[in-house]
Length: 228
Image (cartoon, rainbow, N blue to C red; front, side, top):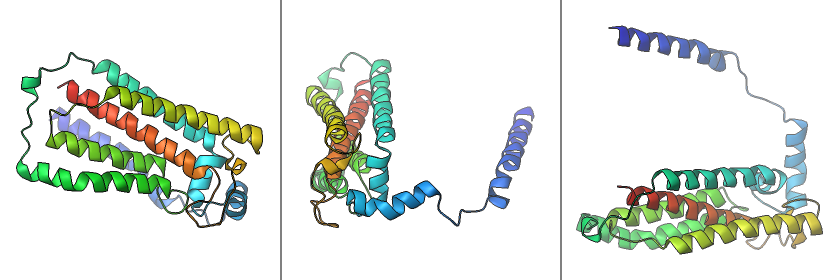
């Protein structure tokens, strides 16, 4: 009885806290000065058809670098807490059905291709490095479900994660040295607006982010699998 009463009181307080958000907060009808700058100058300055990409990768590139760093720290923490001796191979036999294994064989290449497409076209359409990396990791997760005895090449994951992060910073420094600031994409030609090879270094930056995020998430999945 006391537990139920506590739950009810908690829910009432949550409603009281959230009610003003539904009744009093009104959407902004006018853009702020910073937003106006992004909207008006973004396509011409950076050559990216996707304005969100222009903001995330270039105007707020340091924030994106911080987000990638947070994901790396989370991956390292999970690997530390879930570390465990390798399970004997006889205990790792696949129990997936034929349907799952067959579906994985057919879908995995398409999932990986979709992930690559998402971060390669992040400057043209909705998507980008984080989304593409997650899609790639989901494909590897499906493979793990189909073949529980599969062994991920940890060394390859470490190299992909490390090199993509290092080149991300190097591109940022090149933007600082050759263009207008850190991660400024204009040290490479902007190309034709709306084309695949456009927006300067943004496609390269998003590709590196996609590889880094994908490698880190696959590392998390691998640590979780090994800890079972």
